Image 1 (tube, helix red, strand yellow):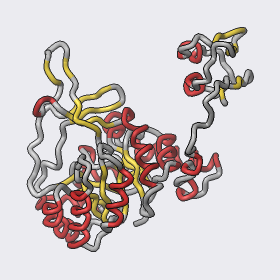
Image 2 (cartoon, helix red, strand yellow):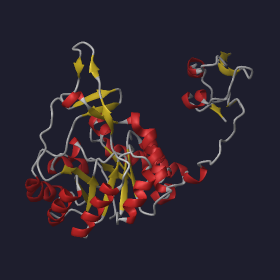
Image 3 (cartoon, helix red, strand yellow):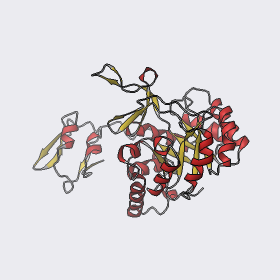
Image 4 (cartoon, helix red, strand yellow):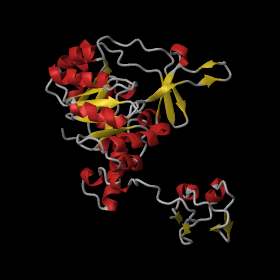
Length: 352
């Protein structure tokens, strides 16, 4: 499949039907991924979503629309966009074996298997892949949860079972949030449990993508907390060939697909990257087997860049930074070289 750009939606409420898929295509997504379908339509608890900073917790399930309606109406409508359409299907091997041929008949271009499996035995995942490959000729991606013993092993086993690509990661949980005024959970699910998505899980997602990319020879699609083109670049450099976005499209609107695609293009032009392949996996060679160093080294200060904003002073836990004459100064006797000041400096005046 050839995508218009590497920015795709992730299975979830933003791709709930054919109409919403068309809207996301019109807003600039490079391809389409539909909400997960299963044998029976879901009965979703309410309320089922809550914002937590820039992240979300949700008790959403699979699609409330029956499979028959997806096959007869929603997939064909989404295909009107002229973009590759990946149908998310779940969950057990037996269910996928029943669903996959019907979805293929509707004209989708690939399957994404949503297994939601979080144990230590990869057999349910490999069984799902083998079930899909046994009843369809479509490319099969499998979406993995990070809550397994070794996600790279799961990815490799999925590849051995015939998977054509890996999608990582799924949401994290279960989690719970309490309304302290009402003394009860904010979600209406059983026990108030939900699942965490958004920027809070991005570092975990990037690590999983890097681990997977070093373990398999099939494409990896990165998911988890992407909100701008820099996040996309981070996933690509960690080994992803494309990314998926859901939470940011909920909190900021579906226009984000085209905006991020445009900003990614500008970033690549400015840095001399001609293709997505030029970016994919370039950071993997720089993941050290040993610590870079264990001795303190204070950051260098570019006085021409420093604006004297004081964020470095505010964040330093060792009282090693001061502002003198409008410029940052570091006390080498207090500085431990932790790097926190470097990470919070807006003009990048601090660097190792």
